[in-house]
Image 1 (cartoon, rainbow, N blue to C red):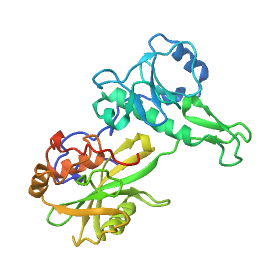
Image 2 (cartoon, helix red, strand yellow; image 1 turned 180 degrees about the horizontal axis):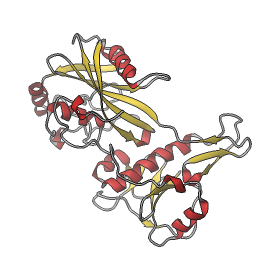
Image 3 (cartoon, one colour; image 1 turned 90 degrees about the horizontal axis):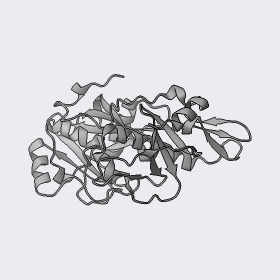
Image 4 (cartoon, rainbow, N blue to C red; image 1 turned 30 degrees about the vertical axis):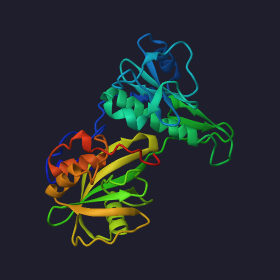
Length: 311
């Protein structure tokens, strides 16, 4: 499925964050221990640190990760990120001095650092939640430069998983957009596009149709793909879609949605200015979809600053 930027009513205001990281992961080296050992010992190789709780260590000012020489001994849980010079991420189970929550800093990182941070956050969470074999219950150990775990008893192999989530710009015949506030939003004015996990044996398009119907009571008549991005700390890939509906009459599920509202472009601009609505950070797919519909960037002052509960 190729990205179709024409799925959005207007040209996207900017590139979707990490839609193309342009980083060479050099994945063919993951199982070649001698080559990895040589790269680790190379004086040009560098490593940064990520905590299992989702925190990053950045330089003063927050516009880059702290990179250090790799040294002579490679820890058990150091993840190979590829690149040239070689980059690694050390995943720490303990709090890291000077680290900050990833949401607070990742948007300011250059693409190379953001890619490495995303890899470390995603794999760190996966390693932390998969210490035992689901087949026999024995402990598992990291292998292949952090990209696999192996059971020491039954020798079963396990690989990192990524959960797909669809997030939709829901539009009606008048080209209005429907924004929602979930119960997990800490801010009472924070709104974004509706989203939901893709079920087992379900296409992306069917997931959009189901989620829009379940959360908003709307019948979708057309679904288009817009782009995708990793959402690292939660081990997800956000798949941005555009859903057009037939009848805009809302019937929200109060368990799933705290509030939902249709906006014209003028109404959204007025609501933002009045402080009635704030939007996700600039690097989130929901913000990208909204700005693509709006046809312009939204000022950073209209960004949700209250911490969202969960990942």
